[in-house]
Image (cartoon, rainbow, N blue to C red; front, side, top):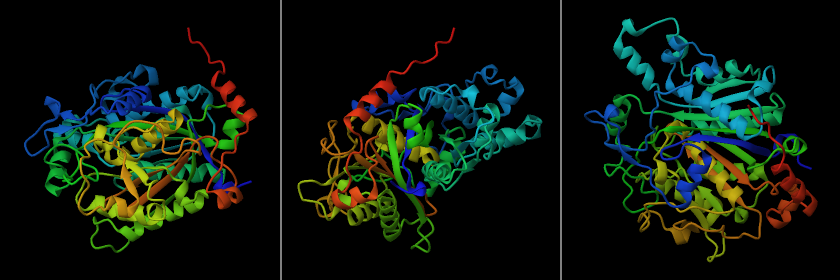
Length: 457
């Protein structure tokens, strides 16, 4: 039996609002058919110097304030990212079969990842005439997590994480640590990214990070930057043993994770191969998973000419080079479907991976024709997934990784497996990883999927 600090964490609830996908089922449909939700910017969010393309949501100004008992004036002062995470947190709990109102007073944690304050920028541009007593809480990024804790009456840890583009995956790591330490019993983790101010897109363009083609060409020779995306994702986490005891449906299991920083690299925003390799090795060591047991990695995969080769080299060194030549590690990126959601990007990758595990299918990564000349895929033991279909080794437990890197050097990697892939370390040492479910456990899981749910009149 694994020690508590290594205990698997179950993902029992999912919710999202993404370009071209209003919920996880729609997102899976987009992924499985190879859909591209990147398009022209809405007319009210374009500006000189800002990119014309991106992954956008419709009606980000809509919010049912009465449902959450929020006064209309307070709702108007709230950053739409707060409103989005309120909705997604509620939906993720419902998807998990949990009535949100029953959690009041519980040690449920809330972790949120976000990096932009576009709504605050617009507010301040309007001047003091637009200020009221709700502005401080409405515009403060730290309230993204606190708002959900307040509305639901949750007493566990509640904080917003900003480690740049790795924020939401770092939030997942922190939530898992909180659950394993016993300071919380349940965790809601969300990430939000809304492109509300033309200034933030213009600043990103000036920084030189955006693709002039409006595409993410992940690992491709055409890689020239990323395209921005907006939306949000929320997941509900619980220790696996408690999830099984409670009869929860388990979408996938988080077997381990790790976070580090590049330190003194060649530049503050220049990724470091050694640091990325180190975070990968640490994550799999914590998970007790052998490198050759990993079948797929959801890349950070922004499609930048500097970042992609560094990520590929680190992956190859940690997971790819010791593989048989006919069994390369498959990789891909949801950024090719919906754009780069920046502070929420890691959770988009985790959602894609959770859906891929639970449905036992892998979607294609788009916009790949020929590899970046600086990425020797065969030598590194890697292959970009370019078709939808079954996992490479369906007969073995499905194991995947999710990577997310911040521009300031904060790296995070999460190891994901199917619900049965939680055998003890001894079994992993001899066989990479083996399934723990017996036939009886499988029948029990199937029965839990059919558990009765309340019918609201």
